[in-house]
Amino acid sequence: SVRLVNSGGGSVQAGGSLRLSCVVSGFTVEALSVAWFRQAPGQQREGVATQGRFGNTNHADSVKGRFTISRDSAQNTLDLPMKSLKTEDTALYYCAADGTWPIPHPFRGAFYNYWGQGTQVTVSS
Image 1 (tube, rainbow, N blue to C red):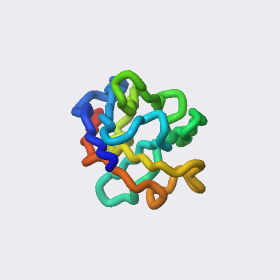
Image 2 (image 1 turned 120 degrees about the vertical axis):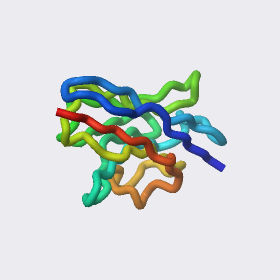
Image 3 (image 1 turned 90 degrees about the horizontal axis):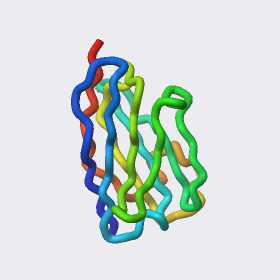
């Protein structure tokens, strides 16, 4: 079965950068529909960025131009480099994947069967 393991994250000041990574095992990342979600305390989970099986990419308006979803076929990872971080980016970040393509609603977490364990990103002012 597919297994996702989050890494990266941490604490940074506003304006700084971080890189999240997700190691995929049990399947080749190129054959999956993938996404990043985040959940801040007291808030609902929200989709941050998605990438379909054939590379079509979408980013939430709140992160456009700052976050970029990508995959590394050699390392079999899903990555999320983040720059110009804001305090409102503070959240627990999860990678997600599914073998379905296309995902009917890519920014809805219910359509993904496989999830990483989550990694904390904290941005201070």
